[in-house]
Image (cartoon, rainbow, N blue to C red; front, side, top):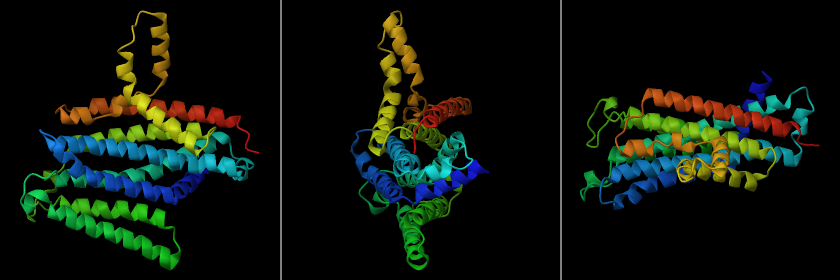
Length: 324
């Protein structure tokens, strides 16, 4: 129960941060602008739209993970407010686990909203011609603006009447309202005719979104481990470095001779770094390769092992951290 109480407080603290709403809005705008950015290829623009969208989701998730991790732990250490928790009969391990669960729940809300925006942009597609019906998907624009405006107005009203924190109410209501918009859009085609919701249902794309979210959870564990010793800027740099290194480590290892002692040491050190290339599904989607359930299960097990190792490292580093 102690861990769940800490997780609940960490979740509320995370989504109440103004930076959470700012990153959420920035990620939404970036996903919308991708529709125009993807229109300059000489081949399939919609494949580039998917690639840009997944990249935006991963980068936005990294920023959310870094900012929320530092807000729930590093800032508490700097302000000495963490003493009110560790001075009670609460183990530091329980505090780290609770903080991570709360941060993960907050990331789920933010990623859920951004993933729905991404699915709406995929349904909208890139401009296919000069006619109005080829340029814009009017059902997508209509219901997205309608339900998005409803979420914004509801959050503003709750803040004005009941003094509820605007960022937290906006994040939750934005995710729920856009989910309703997506459900309605899936039942209507571009010509406003009713269709089966399964027409726009793409299991491969949903599987890809699940892989990206697992990568974000791994990066959240990296950010939480770093925040036990570092400040906000340093944690953000470590998280960004972990993302870049995790994406290129596989290609980098291919250039190192395997027979040398130096090569063996480098490979051993690189084995400790999370290989985020396993979570990157854009290449498979754009090249028409299927993401099998067996592959998804294997990557999920790999992500669970990484998170367990990183949280254990965070507990070890926090056990000997002076917070007094």
